[in-house]
Amino acid sequence: MPKTHQHDTLIIGGGAAGLSLALRLADNCRVAIITKGPSKDGSTYFAQGGVSAVLSEADSFASHINDTLNVGGGLSDINTIRFTVENGPENIRWMQELGVPFSSDIFSSGKRRLHLTREGGHSHRRVVHAADATGKAMSDTLENHARQHHNIEFYEHHLAVDLITTEKQGYNDIENTCIGAYVFNKKTRLVETFSARSVVLATGGASKVYLYTSNPDGSTGDGIAMAWRAGCSVSNMEFNQFHPTCLYHPEAKSFLISEAVRGEGGKLLLPDGQPFMQKFDQRGELAPRDIVARAIDHEMKRLGVPCIYLDISHRSAAFIASHFPTIYQRCKQYGIDITKEPIPVVPAAHYTCGGVNTNLNGRTEISHLYAIGETAHTGLHGSNRMASNSLLECLVFAQSAARDIISRLSEPSHNREISNWDESRVTDSDEDVVISHNWDELRRFMWDYVGIVRTNKRLERAMHRASLLQQEIDEYYSNFRISNDLIELRNLTVVAELIIRSAMKRKESRGLHFSLDYPAVDDSTASENTVLKPQHKSVTEKIKIIK
Image (cartoon, rainbow, N blue to C red; front, side, top):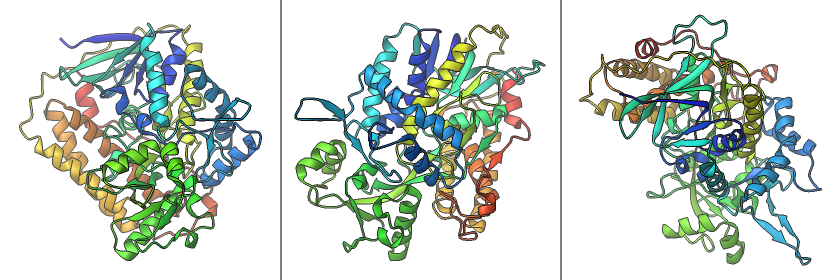
C-alpha cells in the first residue's frame, strides 16, 4: 500500500531556495523536503561564482538596481529588483551567521572583510563568494543546519509527479487550492501521497531540455511543468541563458568555467590566440552573458571550430590556484594547466530566466502554492539574468515566502480527503527504448532549432516535433507504470513547448532571445513580457487524477 504523509509545508527541491526556506519555517511548522536524489545533486551545489549584494561603501543599491535593469533589457520589474537588492545584505549576513565560509581579505590591522569580485554586467565589485565553490559552501551549510532541525524531514530519491489541487480532486471551492503532491519513490517505485497546508516549488530550471548544458541531470523543469498542468501561467520562457564558458573536453561533461575568471582578467581568444570580444562590445569579456555567448557562437560557426579559448595564465600561478582552486584542479585532471595555457570552452544552456508567475511573496495563481528560485518568474531577470543575481533571488524570496507562509498558519486547515494514486489500469512497459529515443530527439532538436540563434523556420520545425513527441509520451504515460525517466521526459516536453511558443510570440531580438528574422529590438514592446496561460487540462491529467 503506498504511503501517505502529512506536513504543514511541502518543499519540492533541496537547493538554496528550498533549504533556506525550510530553515526559516522550521521553528513554526513541520516541513518536508523532497529531492530527486541526494540534496547535493541540485544546481546550487555546482554554482561557482557567488551571490551579488551591496556590501561596500563604494557601491549602492541604486547602482545594483541600474545594472540589473540594463542587463534585463527592458523587461525587468523595477519593484522586484528594488525588493531583491535592498534585501540582499541582510541575507548575506544571515548566511554568515549560519557559518558559510565566504572568502575574505585580512588587513594589517587584523580585521577581516568579505572579498568581493566583479562579474559581467556589474559596475562594481559586489559578488561575495567562497573561492570558486560558493554553491557547495552554501549548500553544505544550509543542509547541515536543516538536518539537525527536528521539524524538517528529508525525503531523498523522491520525484514529484503532479500537484494535487482541490479542482483536480473534484471539490467545488471558490478558490482552487494546492493541497499536496503525488510523489514517486524511486526506491520502492510506488507513488506516495504528500498532503500539506502549503506547497512550494523550488525545483530549479529546465536547461536539461538542451543537448549541451552546465546543469546537473535533474534540471528538467519539473516545477514549471507541474504548475502549468495545475493551471498556473508562465512568463518569458523564451529567455534561456547560455553560459559562455563551459569546459570543452570529451570527459568533462558539463563543467562550468566561472564568469569570475573573466572578472579577474581572463581573455577570450580564437584558436590563433587573437582576442575578439572588443569587436562585439566595448565591455569586452565583461559584457553580459547573452552578448558573450552569441559572440563565441558566431566565431565558432564563422571559423568552423569546435571551441574557443579562455586565458587567465597571465595572472600569477599563486593567484589562480587560490582564487580558482576547483577550476584549477578539475582542468588539471584533464591535462590542462590553466596557469600556463588557455582553457578550451564552449557555450552551454545554463539558466531559465522565465518560469511560474509569482508575486513578491512567492505566491502563484493557485492558493497555497508557491514558487521560488529558478522555477519562478518574479520579474527580476527580464530578458537576461545578471551574473550572481540567481542565488540572491533564492535567498530573498525564500525569506519573503517564509514570512507569508507563517502568517497563514492560523488559517483553517483544508482537511480535504485526497484520492490515492491508482495503477490498476496500467501495466509495466516492455519498450523503454521509446523513452530514451524521445529524450535524445527532444534535446537535439531544441539545441539545433531553439538555441542561441533562432529563426521562424527553425521554431516551426521544433514545434512540429514537440507536438509529435507530446502525443507519443501522453499515450505512453496513459498506458504504462511511470518511471523516473518518463516523469522527467514528460516534464521536458511541456517545457520545450512553452519555450517554443514563447519564442514564436516574440517578434524581435531582445536579451537572450535572438532571431535572424527579427534582428532588431522593437521598442514598442519594451515592457511586454511573454505570458502563456493554460487553456485546458491534458488528457493525461484526467486519466491519472481520477483514480
